[in-house]
Length: 280
Image (cartoon, rainbow, N blue to C red; front, side):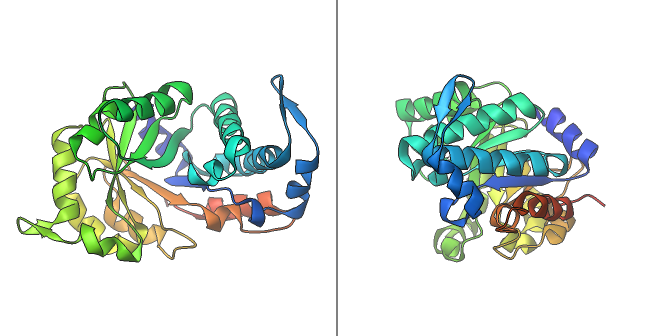
């Protein structure tokens, strides 16, 4: 998906919401967890155990929230921890989104950060095998970790810049040549990319920094996690961080996925999604 197509979706739906599909089996409603005891056939493949529960939970969340968001962001850790079952569920989830809601922007929240041939294989895995639009990346090892992902047309590298966790200040706010390290990282990354193939992660709990960031990074999209359960304000993010092309994907995960633990969980997810990151 290119930048213009993403912008059109934001304008069409009047939202900047990205729903994080961070599936925690222990937090699922009991009736969904109970599905693990049986199997279901999906396009000729049988799914049982945790894989079936994860798929059914994700499908319900996706169907409920699709009218109110423009992107989905599965966090790989929440699938890898369940081994083969989790990865099969992730691939089935990606296929479901691509088939049922092809207009969605799809992010692999993987935070990869290796170099050379390893980076190329990561890019191949996420962009060719699994057909994600974007993948989150750590820039700590420099340009070599990022460039292989920029070689794909209409695919995106999403680089960690100023994150929402409290200990981020230990490195990201350190001074380099009179500026915070996160700014030096962003400027270096901007020199090897364009607003059409790179985004930056800026946490919603750092909303006061967004105006400052826009002074030196006016055009790139920003992926903004930390809304909802982490306490970030979507309204403040939009006030300080939006640009003429929207320029934001505001992520909420737990606040939407686990808004309710009963059989009404999907309706509750839809309600929260409809109220989050709306363009007034």
